[in-house]
Length: 445
Image 1 (cartoon, rainbow, N blue to C red):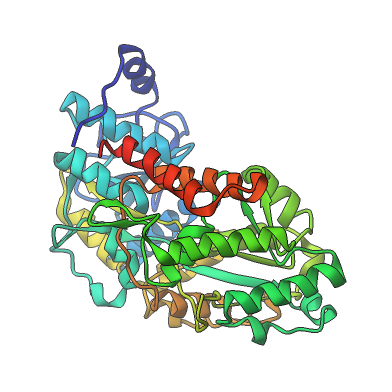
Image 2: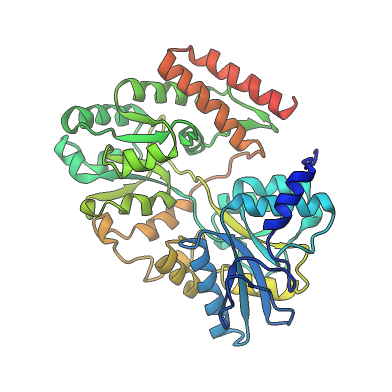
């Protein structure tokens, strides 16, 4: 696999924003489980009680890491510190690995990095010396959702410890369903034909779409296909035109658009701000990380519930979309401490996961942690149902499908084909053939 070629300008720019190194670097961040450091100088300590980690999202991932650090300090090592280097987005960490790997110098990396699930296999393949496996960590891997581990298990070795849960939820406005003469029970694991039938009633009687999706970054195909146990790839190659279920799914999407059941937004902001926050929809199907967006409309509290996805033939549909795990880098000089910290906290601590849920909305894929009292509390916004325990349980049913480093490229090509089909009336197979041809070109096939 070819490594990325970096220009001199790119190297210079990235050097300025690189994540802080273990015991030497400087960057934006804080210290959890100890004295707070200034935002301008979050250096990782060089002693046997300190680790450094790079992560993004101060309202989601960072509170989860702070919860883990506090848990470990209070219950294992009172001298423990976790120096958190907050970056603006996930690509900052990906770029730091690329730069370090291209230079053959991993001393610039923090001990641990948070990394996107869909990207990790490519980066381990491109830069195998950048990461250390955590196969010896004292973790009951059977206690995690199988699909989640399928990303971080490479060549039969565990490289990552899961943090969040990307399990897909089908969330619906129960008041609007009732207004249209339906209930959420009819949508639980229904066929897509039934979904369309109900969606037409909802639109005709309430003026709301039953579903929306970002037209550019269209994840609907991937989620619908995974719920069928299928992938867009087969043996490392695109599996699009000859994939009967994928073709059927695209036909279903086209039908939903034409019948005002599905609104394809122009972009991500249109999807979140106009359709969800703008109250255009009676339903949302996406990774459960979409829940905080739904909850921003305070007037709709108590009007939502969740269930499983529809499938082509009917039956509960389970899928996952998005998520990240924690990885130990080559620069970590105290791998034993890193493994102990990760094993004790994200390896299954109810204390860590309860606090991560309360403080940042991070939902675990650790099955036993999802059975705590906190997870089983009713959520007022979702009609007092225990949605977090339900999400963990649903995640345990998601089956792995073949992944590819070209996941997002495939999404881009298929999304463009769907827009051509729905807006221009293009033939489904012709448009998908064009998408597959473009994807093969990108993959060098």
